[in-house]
Length: 80
Image (tube, rainbow, N blue to C red; front, side, top):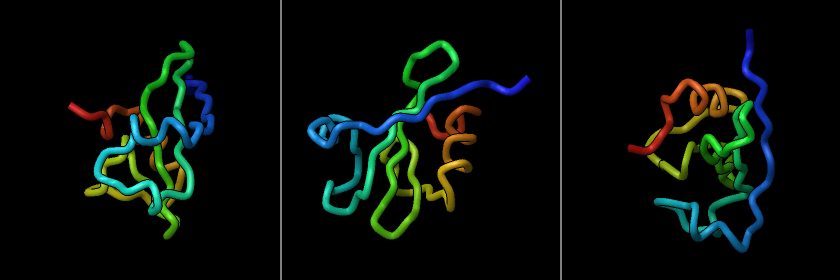
């Protein structure tokens, strides 16, 4: 059975609290990923270059929102 998730935009006024390793000028959008229980599992940011990063970690890139969300839900992108 697949897990149902919800992805929502994070208001730009909250970006500085969430972004790690990025300047906000490099980000196109910041998204919150919610698990089936309604709690935030993590965040995905999309750069102006069209790459996706989990929890603002610039060292790991994903080619699509789907790949980043899948990795986040598996726990691969959680910050320690």
